[in-house]
Image 1 (cartoon, helix red, strand yellow):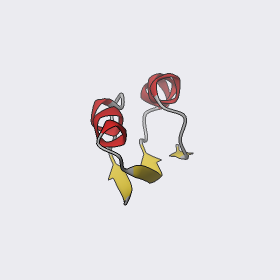
Image 2 (tube, rainbow, N blue to C red; image 1 turned 30 degrees about the horizontal axis):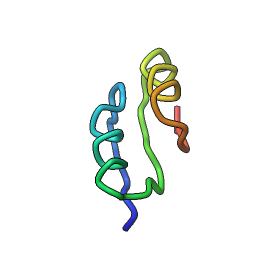
Image 3 (cartoon, rainbow, N blue to C red; image 1 turned 60 degrees about the horizontal axis):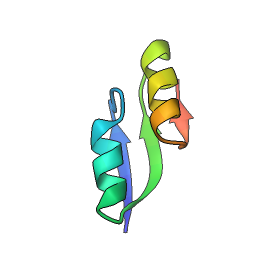
Image 4 (cartoon, one colour; image 1 turned 45 degrees about the horizontal axis):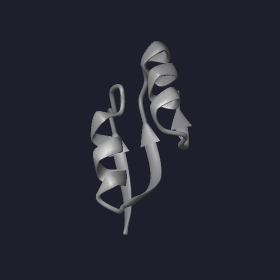
Length: 48
């Protein structure tokens, strides 16, 4: 299955969803610093 995450924050939910076997189609976060943390936690497609 695939997931789309909006307003992702630092990526805690994204990590949990990936552990559950979902593949991320897109993860969106607006805040630049939060995107840096999210990118460090999970390599994904980011929209800034």
